[in-house]
Image 1 (cartoon, one colour):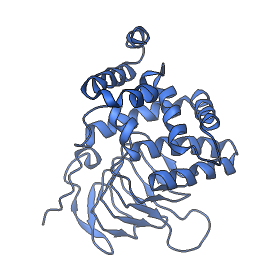
Image 2: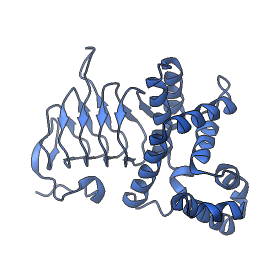
Image 3: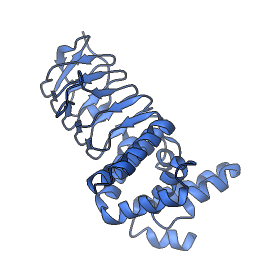
Image 4: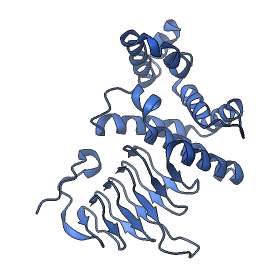
Length: 267
C-alpha cells in the first residue's frame, strides 16, 4: 500500500498528503488505525475514499452500503467535476477553518464537508432524472448530518460550511464559488409559491451563523451577511448587511470576506 501511495504522489499530491497525514494519525493514536485504514488507506484514490465515506455514513436498513458505494463511484466516474469540486472544498475548509489542522480531518470528521460531497452526488442523480434516488440521498443527509440541501440547488466549488448544523438550502437556490457559511443558515423561500423562489448567492460571500436569506433575491459578490440577520432584499456587492430585517451597515471590509472570515461589524 505504501508503494502505491508513493507512486500516486506524482499524480495526485492532494491524495498523497491525505495518506501521509493518515499514516501519521495512526502513529499518534494506534487505536484509530482500523478506522483510518478502512476510510482512507485501503483506497487507491481520493474519489474511492470519498465513495466509501459516503456509503458508510448514509447506509441504512433501507439501502445498503454496497449500493450507495456503487452510486457514488458511478457519479465520480461519469462527472469528473464532482471530484475536482471535492478537492476545492477540501482546500477551502483547510484554509478558512482555524479548527482544521490537516486535510484528512474534513473527510473523516467534518459533517459540513461530508454533507456537501453527498449533496453533489444527489445533484448528479437529479440531473440524470433519478429524482427519487436523489430525494433519498437528501433525506439521509438530513438525518445523518442535520443538513438539508435540495438536490436541485446549484452549489459552486470552494465552498465551506462550518459546523453545518441546521443548514437549509432550497430547491432553486444558487450558491457561487468560494462561499463560506456557518451553522443554522437558511437559504429559503418566503411562502408557498412555486417557481424560482430562493436566493442567489454570488462568489466570495460570507454568511454568518443563524442568518436567514429568504426569497428570490441576489446577494452580490464578496459581501458579508452578519450572524442572525434576516435578509429579504438584494444585497449590493462588497457590502456588509446586518439586522432584522437586514440593512447595509458598511463595506465588506476586505476583498475576500469568505476567505478572511472576519465577522466583526465595525461601528
